Length: 124
Image 1 (spheres, rainbow, N blue to C red):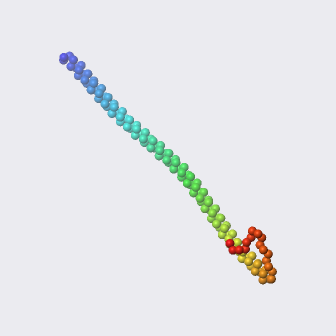
Image 2 (cartoon, rainbow, N blue to C red):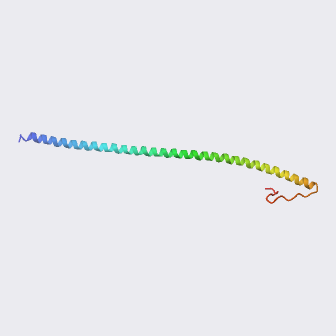
Image 3 (cartoon, helix red, strand yellow):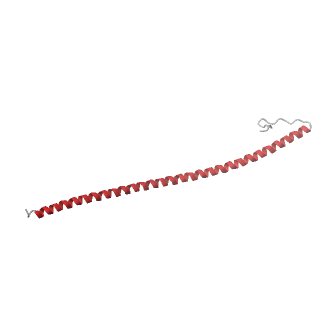
């Protein structure tokens, strides 16, 4: 029996070493898998962040274009408003002039002709 004792001890040590190797390998693989999963999560987050940054840049470009359009429209509206004010002033000046002419014609005993069809001398 003593002859088998070293063989049994070596066998038990081999089994123990193999078991320990398997346990450590599993643990190492588990840790490696966790690290890889974390890296994949970080990479997917980085990709999402990049996508959102690109989308934000496109949105900013669209906003800038729209702001430029709004500024152009504001300038156009302001210009048109100024033209309307000038036309109103001109209209009132012409109306006063026409009324003075009508009064002048009536003062000389004549009746002024009727204005053409689209023209109205009534106040707007």
